Length: 93
Length: 172
Image 1 (cartoon, rainbow over the protein chains, first blue to last red):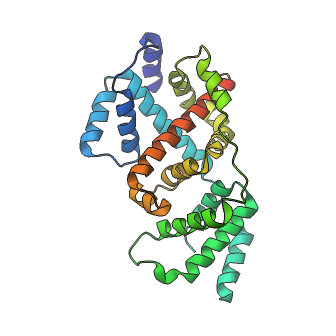
Image 2: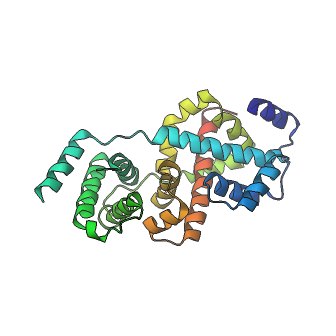
Image 3: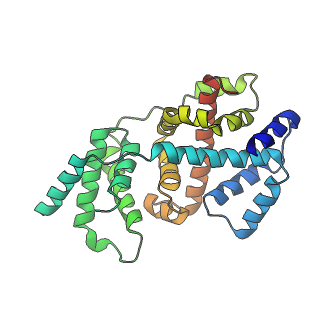
């Protein structure tokens, strides 16, 4: 589905196609993705991206970046020797 | 002790150095243990621990830790001045393709690490650790409006960095 939307966007969307609400919509979309938006803001974003390719695009990129960051940056495990050292230090107090 | 992995991850992302991250984590744990009475029961323990770690980093490590690689503004500028024009559409297609995501593994870490530590921190706290804005405000000792604007700027910078990488990798 996404591919289809992108194909449509790339094929028919003009690169100079600007949305006057883009900045505002992006800010609210970010709040929505962070689960910090009000119900009204959420409704505005969902309605707007339903009819504006440019803003839908921005929203989807935001979502994708969050997913990649989560996927790629969270797998650091604490080395066992550090855990042991901490236990020893706390135990010694 | 809960949250150790998350704290170590945070320490490493702040210091960008394994030894400093280990020391910072140990300091944090010792301070948490020593000042456990200052923790208010019923409040968010994870946020409390992150706040201790952040304060330790600012007080003890920030000066001595290596300065992170700064955003290569020349790259960014030349990218925008080129005829590629609308970068957002180009990166859109790239970031959503599985193959590109896999290849972006290292680049996303490099891009995140290349942000100034204040910007890096808000992305880590929000996206990796799932803190709410009010919790981040307490951890960082800044107003919630500043959390919001800093996060907005950090996301813009990260997006530009990724667009530059995608362009360099030849994805359009």
